[in-house]
Image 1: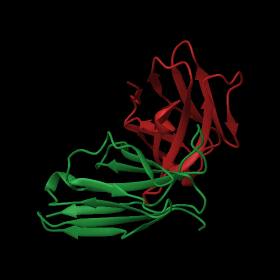
Image 2 (image 1 turned 60 degrees about the vertical axis):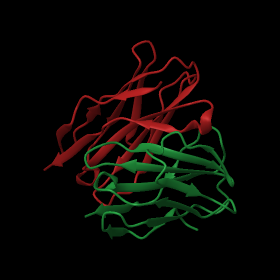
Image 3 (image 1 turned 90 degrees about the horizontal axis):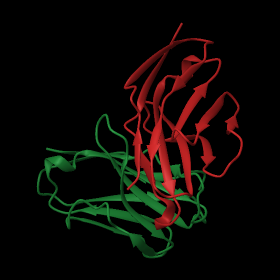
Image 4 (image 1 turned 90 degrees about the vertical axis):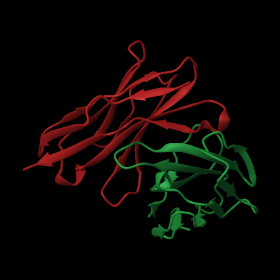
Length: 115
Length: 114
């Protein structure tokens, strides 16, 4: 069985600062993918970034980067230059090969960006 | 369509009523998923379709939950004899292929059972 753990229920960051959201995962499958989604108050899940288990380099997408430490089974999201619009719920998720590659989600981290 | 569309956006049901939730995935997307999201929690997998075939329904909480995708596009999640614990946001997601790619989510249907 796969498990995602997000230990930070809430985080605060000042505008223009960087913030790291923690995510650890557990799986015995050697092939898996790690995702981060943003969920604003409107409810829609917005894809941010993806990291494959065999990718050699950490993924980056604009202001988002994924700090992938395979040996530690961690996949932390780093948001640089935070903006007020970044305030939202952030979910880490994992899929494993097979079974439709369904996503298993963590419990989320509520991020609040302050002036 | 431009994105995944779900209807209705909100649904209030009396305990014991049947409800049907609709999902229009992105045109051409092979894979379709239903998730249930309780308040303050992450989404939980319910079921998965590849085209019209329901390949995984291991997350459906009881036999009161039924999903279909008869023509491989629009999907309906039906809940019979609703109970208060069914109150949640139901999210639909689609994906172009069947491999490890990102899911595109709809805005969800918020179901409240009174």
